[in-house]
Image 1 (cartoon, one colour):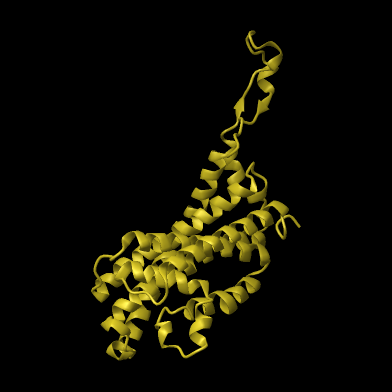
Image 2 (image 1 turned 30 degrees about the vertical axis):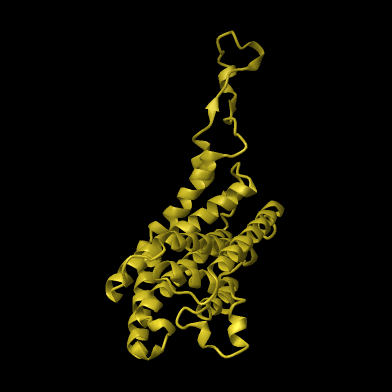
Length: 292
């Protein structure tokens, strides 16, 4: 348990009334916690390691299964569509598809890790393990979000390697741009997962959020097609989907092709992360649907 792991770092202090004298037996009975600075680094590290170990213990389900799913998507769409996609600029459809599948895998797993962590704790009745340790709302937010980002990025790297080998995709054309959108996208979905996990009290409620909000946003974001082929006004509506900018920016970083401005995507995702981060922080401060 998280509280038990942090408790190991408690120390014994002598009585402050006579610091020069040797501590007596009565003085040694007073066990006080270590002095915690503005940031509880020990607790933050423990929470992060807990979140990482959660999905590593079931790596077949959390790492291998998403990679296999992305490979199946690549096989099905490459056979069904192939050269008939008609993309502008003479871009091969498989090369166009791979970055979208990788990013979609990253986003889904970053969301799943944070949301499932909170919902499972609620259902099992051990949410107190998050609330009882000396961790502030900012530390809880950072630890949970970092764990979700780690899972999303790790799954994405595995998927990218497998899909690149199968699809013959080379090295990223703009690696720093790809890394920036990978970071911003995984962080945003990890924050959304925290809000969804706090909102849901049962697995049914969590499944409803996933099936009716997260999945449609992911599949209607230009993963399998270019939004330039959509008729008006659907092409404009598609640009209102934040997931589109994650996938479009990551695709530009991988193959140098984008449907919209990369700068607008970076600014939009940065601002959205700041807003969601603040909302998550305020919700954790209030204890809404966590302490009641």
